[in-house]
Image 1 (cartoon, one colour):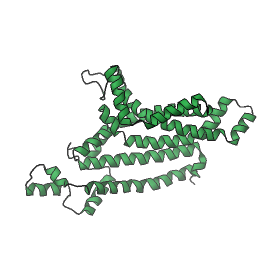
Image 2 (spheres, rainbow, N blue to C red):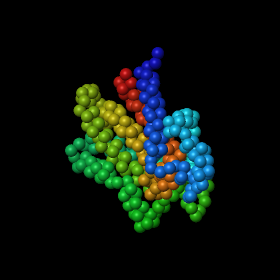
Image 3 (cartoon, rainbow, N blue to C red):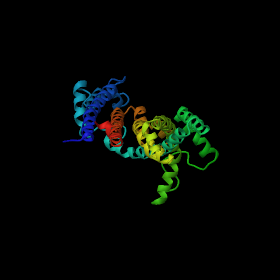
Image 4 (spheres, rainbow, N blue to C red):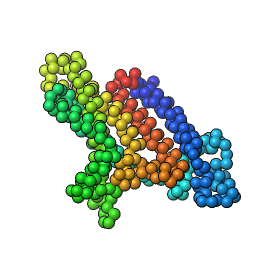
Amino acid sequence: MLGGLGLLILRRLALGVPLVLIIIVLTFALVRLAPGDPALLLAGDAPTPEFLAQVRAEYDLDKPLQQQLLTYLLHAVQGNLGTSIYFGQPVTRLILQYFPVTLLLTTLAMFSASVLGILLGVIAADRRDTATDAIVGGASLLGFSIPIFWLGQLLVLLFAVTLDILPAGGWSSARVTYYGFDYVLDVAQHLILPVTTLMLFETAMITRFTRAAMIEALGKDYVTVAYAKGATHSRVLWRHALANALTTSVTVIGLEFGVLLAGAVVTEIIYGLPGLGRLFFDSIFRRDFQLMTGCFIFASTAVVIVNIITDIVVAVLDPRVGR
């Protein structure tokens, strides 16, 4: 028989699969119902009626919307998201080509934000209503309030233009070609500013939730019992209170990671990174509806998968969740 964790995984998958299908249907419908004739965009300026009809037939635009949706849905579940109008390549291949940049960017930002946010949240809760708590709370409020697009430009002006110690953007140096470990260092240097831009906002979010969860945990009876048994303050703080407050932090991290993964568009545009966000942004301006639909479906599916993984991790940390 399946245990509580196994049942939880099955329940989340049972909810996740229909949700992905709903996302595909809604995305397809909204893109197709947008103003403008896709066939005219594909055919170019002043196409002949014969060529326009050929384009419609090639992309199944001459068929009813319901039939187009069914065909697209059958192809999508097999990993075929169509062919990009602008690039002339399969959408799936383009997404897999650009996605690693976004994945690396968001993973580094989320990992750094998680470590720093949990640490600051624990410190603020431990020193509640002191100057330290006020400083951490003020800094987190500031980081949470600053718009990412403004922060990114500010960091570029400060560290790339004024101080000239970090590159302003790009994935790697354009004038010099590096190989091996030197290439890794060059990419790491280019990622410092974009990772910092995303990290500051997420750190503020995680800090605030961790602090609230820690304050609640420190007021529980098991903390009093641990002190009565002679446990040190450090052990009570990090082993008992944090272990129980961590479920809240992990939930926030999972939700924010999914949002970050799908919403790194602004940061990638500011720093000129060849990621999924930039690909999605370009597909909108190029009216590449096949690529735009594929990017949105892929990003939405990634969010659903990350949320399912988060639920599983939370259930491992707190078995009561899986019951």
